[in-house]
Figure 1 (cartoon, one colour):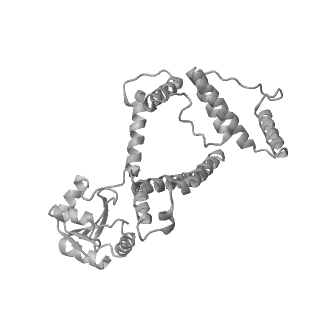
Figure 2: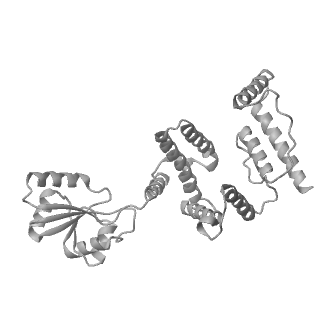
Figure 3: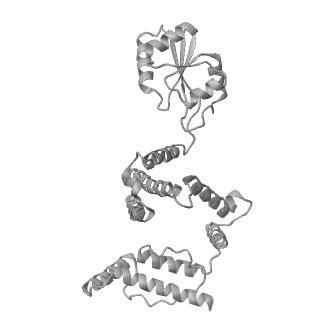
Length: 320
């Protein structure tokens, strides 16, 4: 009986990168396709008989299978779902015409769809792409990165995994935008450079996974991470690298955390006597914000000044 094999391949892998079984198939039977793609060219260069059909339909494939016994339909990047559906319905009604088989010659590895992000971003940044995106700068996009990160945080707090997936996608959009803009900068780098740096960092800072270093507990892993980070950055202070633009409360907590982890002196005013738990703390903080509002003071700015002053005092104690 005549046989039609639908060969589906990943458009995100290099052309010609197929399984051994797929190569055996395309070398043994005529290959038809509706796309003059890189995959078709790779097969033709390897000596396979490849024919591009300008108007492929079920009748054309069935006729070719009847003539040759077996034909291979090389699906395009989108999988040619419409043609596959038409062919499948036809052979359900008339199964005596041919057998239909789907074969996967290659498939997407984990993370392959990230390549689509790069492709789409390149298209948006092209001269005939999106004018708004071409006019953006790292500075003009900075607030969107913060907004998307906060929205992802809200989804985490709400335990909404569907929303988190969407919001992390928006964070990824910001990363891709910044990387694409950097590609055109005076000293360019690409998203591949970004990813390569991240991989190198993760491998270097996790010697208990990628090396032969043994650790006892999570505390030792954290200590190793901080030690290696300090060696990489050659920082003069344990507080170096703290993002001063983060919200003042987070900034204050980070300064305290870094100082205590490094056993640095931290002299603090005594806490309110009525603060004994999270509820009490929240009420006390809210009361301070309310008092600041009554006095026409900026509580955020005031806490930031106090936190940075404390950081200066800690750095002075380090050097003294």
